[in-house]
Image (cartoon, rainbow, N blue to C red; front, side, top):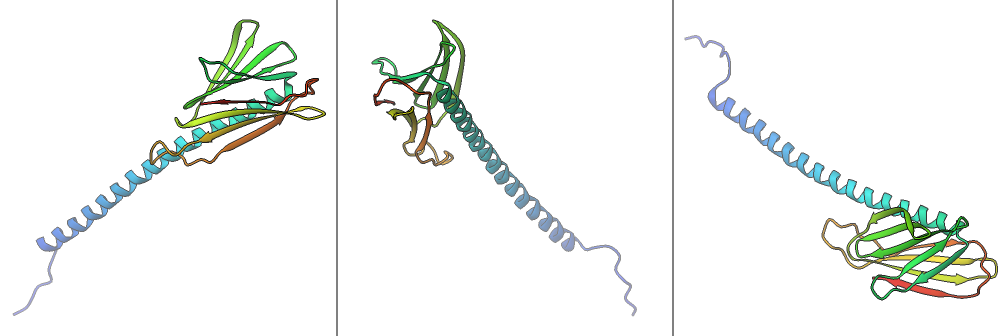
Length: 177
């Protein structure tokens, strides 16, 4: 008796092939989902980092241009740093939990305002040191723990900038909660 060559595949071979393809597709879906989660978390961290960079640039440029600076202690609000620019504009920096704010005021009218998102558990401190040629303004942002597992772990950030020469010889400290 002669055996003929088989044409096609058996049912068991097709079931095994479909099972293998479905397992590969399932693993691919899980990997894609995790990759999208990592990408989304990376974008959030990148936005926070860029916001902190923008805040740092504004702070440094305002301090360099300032003719006077002082820490304003307010019982109702968190302490703020006030910088007086040559054109009589006043720039106020304040930090509330989760938010850093920069306000530009001309007289009694607010001409510009910017806000930067910070972790909810952040606090800000200002320190003004007098030196013979200028005053050195420190802006310190502290992060207490992490608000969630996806929160960026950050250490204390310390920025300092020189301002224009001041006639006074004082050292002032203020902190915001």
